[in-house]
Image 1 (spheres, rainbow, N blue to C red):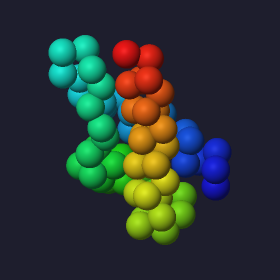
Image 2 (cartoon, rainbow, N blue to C red):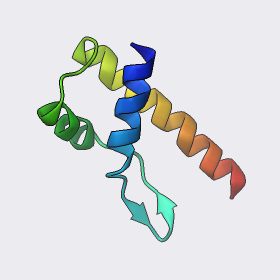
Image 3 (spheres, one colour):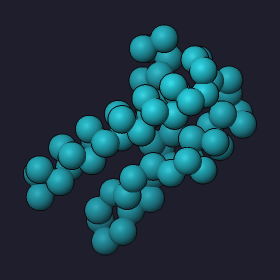
Image 4 (tube, rainbow, N blue to C red):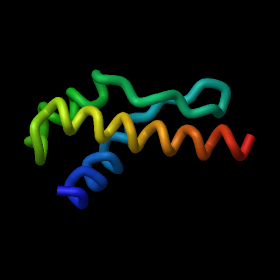
Length: 66
């Protein structure tokens, strides 16, 4: 399941928007678009929490570097 979640995150993150070269957080709409094309590998509420948690870690690292 972990590999499937990380793979899904990589696909979802391709739709990330940027504002003045700063990445914005993924939205629920981004995750929903993924789920329209693919099945969530686990229960949807857990999947959403996992994707958002991974994205939080990514954004924290980006902001630390700035």
